[in-house]
Each structure stands twice: as C-alpha cells, then as structure tokens.
Length: 367
Ligand code: MG
Image (cartoon, rainbow, N blue to C red; front, side, top):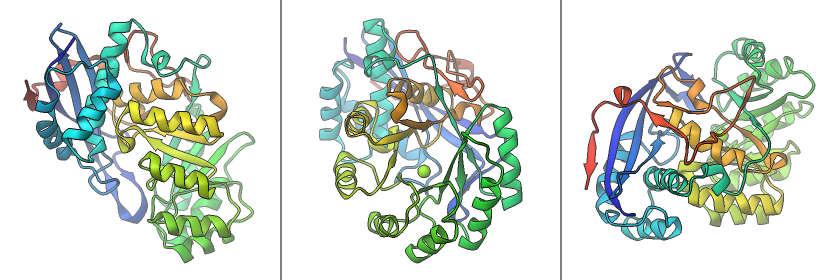
C-alpha cells in the first residue's frame, strides 16, 4: 500500500455562540479548517483535519496548513502510510518544524492503518478504557456575570468540568474566577486558563488573591520560566499548555515539577504518533492530561476521541468536543456528546465518513 494522492479541502466553521474569546483580546468568529485526505494506490482514503485557533495562538495559521502540504506532500508520494514512525521520520527529514502541517498527514495515515487492520484507532493507540469519557466546556471570555451564568447552561448539557478563559485585566479576572467558582457544585472542576495573558507579577498577585478558591491555574504567562516562577510561589494545582510542544520541554517540565497536569494538543505535538509518545510517558509518570487539539469540527473531534478513549481514565484530566461548538458537520460517524461525555467510534480507523457536499472541491491536490 502506497500513498498515491494527497487532497486538502477548506471548510469554514462558524460558532453557535458567534464568537470565541480568550486572553489579550484575541477572538475568532469563523474557523478556517483544512480537511486532509490521503489516498492510496489501492483506492483507500484516510481523513484528518487541522484547524489552528486563529493565527495568534500557536505558531500556526490556516493557510499555512495548505502551503505546508504543498511543500511536504510530494516527498510522501509512494510511501507506505501504515509505517507511521517511518513516515514521520520522512516528514521530519523533508520539512523542519511545522508540526501542525504534519498532523494532517499523520492522522489520515492512522485512519488508513485502522481501516487496513480492521481496528478502531483507539485500540491501535493502546486500547479502549470504559464506555466513554468526560468532556470539559470552555467558557469564552466575557464579563464575570455572563461567564458565571454559563455554568448552569453547560451543566444542563452534562458538563462538570469548566475551563474559564481569563488572561485579561487581572482585577477583572479575579472577579471572573470568583463569580464562576460561586456557581460550582461538589464534583465540578474549574480551570482558569490565562493562555499566556498575564505577566509574572500579575499572575502571582492574582493567584494570591484567589488562594481560597478551588481552581487550577493554566499557562499564566508567555514563557516557561515565568510560569515556573509563578508555580514555585503559589500553591494552586498547575497546568502547562502553550509551552509544552515537544518531548524535550515535556521532560524538562517533568524534571522541574513545573506542573500537575499537562495540556497536550495533537497539532501542537505533530500528530497522533508524536502525541502518543508524550501521552504514554505521562501515563508512566502519573501526570494527568488534557488531551485535545487547537480547534476543529467532526474530524478533529474524532481524532481527539480516539486519543482520549485510549488513555487510562485516572490520568485523563479532560478532553473536548469541538464539533458541538460549531454549526457545520463535516462528517458522518463523528462522536457526539451525550450528557457531557463522548466515546470513540467502534468502526475501523477513525470511523468517520466526510460529507463531500460540505467539503466541496479540493483546494489542493498532490500526486
Ligand atoms: Mg490551554
């Protein structure tokens, strides 16, 4: 089995809530997502999706996915899509960096491997734990009162884990954390994710001001060193996200005891092959994880579901269902939220069947 053709489709994903806002005034209204198809000489098709959170979250942007595939794709024609470590070495040799571009190829090849083996991707990633797993709900940055009012709405949808978007004015963020925390019930879990939005002294002051609140702090500052300094001065359970983009910095953070939980995103690490390495290392060392991606629709959610479902439940801190945030469905068979929980497909591969009428014509073809 050889890769014969690579196709990319551009899909716009509007939001049910119109706009998603996070730290520093950043926001997105319509996501620009790339659906990738890897086709083999046997006529099999593997699928994936890469959707950056705008151009200002990670070093990634939507048009960069397509440009990167145009550059990388010709090096992969003729390669066996089932030999995933080999394929990833080939990608790393042909294009330095750009993990989000490689993610599109890697996930589609996992889909092909699963179809070929007759097994769901989660079983190939290590095995399916339980019937389903819990989801978190992000609370877009708004006024403290509006954010607090969202908790009851999301709890009615079954969510018990809430990720509050802070990283704005620290004094307002203190109000946001207190207002949302006041809505929590026993068993709920609250994360305040600053998405790099505070400078070090602000983060230390804010953490001190909410020292009595049962809340996790996620990625308060831009650099690893600032985050570590905050971590060493305060006692809230601590999560790192944006800084942890590879095994080298993950190992450093584990050695520094810089976090209690780590947020690993598939396209930040470079695909399922690479995030599996990081995930399995964290499992072995007892570090819990939020496993997700930067954004996406049905196809990204399917890949996240297989990764999450193959992770021991006690170390799966949370994960997400982006396809319920957006108004467009790009595939049949994608996992659907039920009472705040989700499950990976039991079909071979990712178990998704793209809606070609939604994808339209490819914007890129490499053969
Ligand atoms: Mg985060």
